[in-house]
Amino acid sequence: NAGVTQTPKFRILKIGQSMTLQCTQDMNHNYMYWYRQDPGMGLKLIYYSVGAGITDKGEVPNGYNVSRSTTEDFPLRLELAAPSQTSVYFCASRSAPSVYEQYFGPGTRLTVT
Amino acid sequence: AQSVTQLDSQVPVFEEAPVELRCNYSSSVSVYLFWYVQYPNQGLQLLLKYLSGSTLVESINGFEAEFNKSQTSFHLRKPSVHISDTAEYFCAVQPGGSYIPTFGRGTSLIVHP
Image (cartoon, rainbow over all chains, first blue to last red; front, side, top):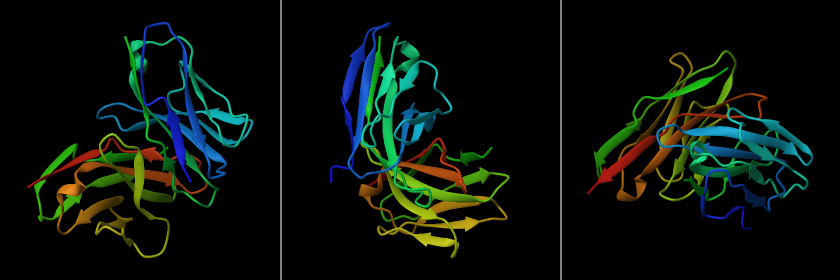
């Protein structure tokens, strides 16, 4: 099993550009999450999904969009990149309501200049 | 809503010394508690969890944490640290029945030779 994979590992964007951060899991997990990690701030939830076709906002959703067309994939879209979106982004998944452990991907380091 | 406070942003310690990383939480409902570890340039991995039962939980690499309901704490301890324990440690809480954990800001454990 590859677990949770994320692409790209690194990306530099100019202000106003758009991009999609890819996240795929091969564990057949229903629950998927996107977090951003800023130094000294812990993890902030951007969006989450409890199954294909179902998504909901987290704590910091502004400037982002998601979709969940399949169980495996949960891409995160940045439409108009801003310097405030410079961060490390982590995707995570979890299998079932009674299983609380989250499995994290290796992260995408994004810089917006 | 729940919140998590990790009282120390950085904990330097010498190899083979004991260490305690502190975590306090607030919540109006019962919660599940977690410690995750993040090694440099990697995603988070579950270290240990408390769901119910014995209030003392242990990991396979010598860490332990004790759930103290009266003090609303879940401190992480290790009697003798190794250089390889150098990492960022995150405490997280999740109300029973919720999809979403809340993470603390993290504690950087730095083990010196």
